[in-house]
Image: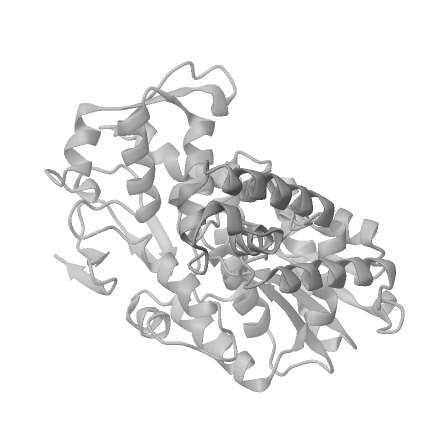
Length: 412
């Protein structure tokens, strides 16, 4: 069992004990020289002990000792057997999330409160400081067009979510569930910025990584028991976090990225995951050398290396290995890449458009290769506008770009 095979955060102690015994056998017969070398106190293979193998296993899983690994597992087991939901009056709690990915698991874990979502993908498309009616029209149209959904259904969901959002200030107890990526952090500041003042009790469960999970993508991958373990770790959202969120939301909606960059290059105790998420979002601006966003660069580079390669495989490669802070769902990724395929001068060629999109093969065009080598600048040839919050990138027009130092640059 490898570290990467633990994907839901639920570590089985007996399996880890078995791994330790198997590792001990390999250490003694000399087939794990690299791991043996990390045990500096040993003179030979014969002197290795089970405790040494257990320490190595714990280290692989992100713990400093076997006892701390065991304590973590025991803690999750205890919470699963003795949930504190009833004592916390969780049944009267309103849970907020930027999707419906954890509601079923929370129900399985024993949560009984009310669940609300704000599913608008604020990390994509225009997000401007407009009167609500104009904002609603803009976002509904973007969602409808980008994801091929019906206008009535998009409008209905958008309206219902914002009716619920308007009532969040009246809550006796609300809990926001977030991770560290741009999708979640923008949801977080959107919710907080909508409040004139904080409600009676608004708490945050926020996580950037999970012990034992080598590649943590998001809360949705965690098992019900692990979600229950997160519950006692919630913290009250204070005035400093509220003010920061309002400042960050205003900066994100601005037509210039300078204020956003200033926040992204600072640290913020009130919302510790915000700055890295904003910095990652800034990298969706065109890079000054070739005009590609980071998502586009990572995707094209992999298509160049592996192509022809399935559309779905490109997405998996980014989520599993290349994306530094995964934030896109699969349909969102599809929408991001489509302009590179549908342009008058495409960067990517797509095979078999009649089959489901994850199975279509993608190949880099000759022009795509010129772009990734920096021999041409993509916004000079693109066919569609691109938005990063309130910043608009119009083809063949002066615009904001991002430099190697991750600071915005105005490009004439």
